Amino acid sequence: RKEVEQDPGPFNVPEGATVAFNCTYSNSASQSFFWYRQDCRKEPKLLMSVYSSGNEDGRFTAQLNRASQYISLLIRDSKLSDSATYLCVVNFPSGAGSYQLTFGKGTKLSVIP
Amino acid sequence: EAGVTQSPTHLIKTRGQQATLRCSPISGHTSVYWYQQALGLGLQFLLWYDEGEERNRGNFPPRFSGRQFPNYSSELNVNALELEDSALYLCASSLRGMSSYNEQFFGPGTRLTVL
Image (tube, rainbow over all chains, first blue to last red):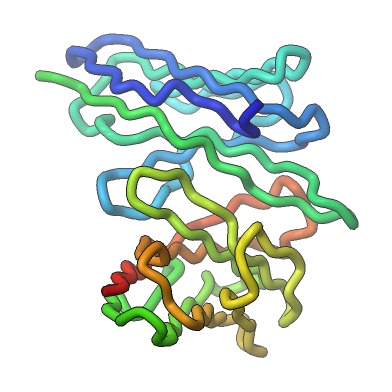
C-alpha cells in the first residue's frame, strides 16, 4: 500500500461547484496532516493544516478520520483561481523522535468558466 | 517578511558533473528540508538539516549530500550527475523540526537539467 494515496484526477468542474478530494495514508502513527496546492511549475504552498477532527477556512474544509486513516478536502463555490494540483501531505514518524513529510502525488483540479 | 529563497533558478549540467544548489530559510526558522520533484512524480524527501546537523535523509544515494551553515542557510550537492537527476529541487524551512506539527514553507525551487 502506498504511504499517501490520492485520486490523481483530473477533476474538471464548473465555476461555483463544490468539489471534494480524498486521501488515504498508511501509517496509523501519523500525527499531523496538511493540504498544499501547487500551481504548474511552481512550488507547493500551504493551504491548510489539518488537526484533530478537521477545520474550516473560508470556502475550504478539511476533515480527518483517524480510524479510517482518511483525509478529505472540500472546496465550495469553486473559483477559476482554484485550478491547481492539491497535495495531501502526512507527517510520518521516522525513528528517534523524528518526523518526515510524505507527499501524495496530487489531485489536479481544473475549474471551468 | 521574506520567504524561502533558492538559487540558482535554473541550472544546466552534463552527466558526471557536480551541482550545488543553495537555500536560505525564512528568518527564525532553523530547519531546512530538501525535496526532489521529477517530472510527473510526487515530491520525494531528500534531506533534513536542523541546527547544522543532518537529522534525516530519504532513500537517495550518498552522492546526494548537503550541509547547513551557522546562519541556517543550506547547500545541496549532487555529485556524478545522472540524466535521471533532472528535476525541480525544492527547499523548505520550518521552525525547529522535531515537532510533527511544524508547517513547512517552500522556496521557488531550482530546476536542474542534466544533459
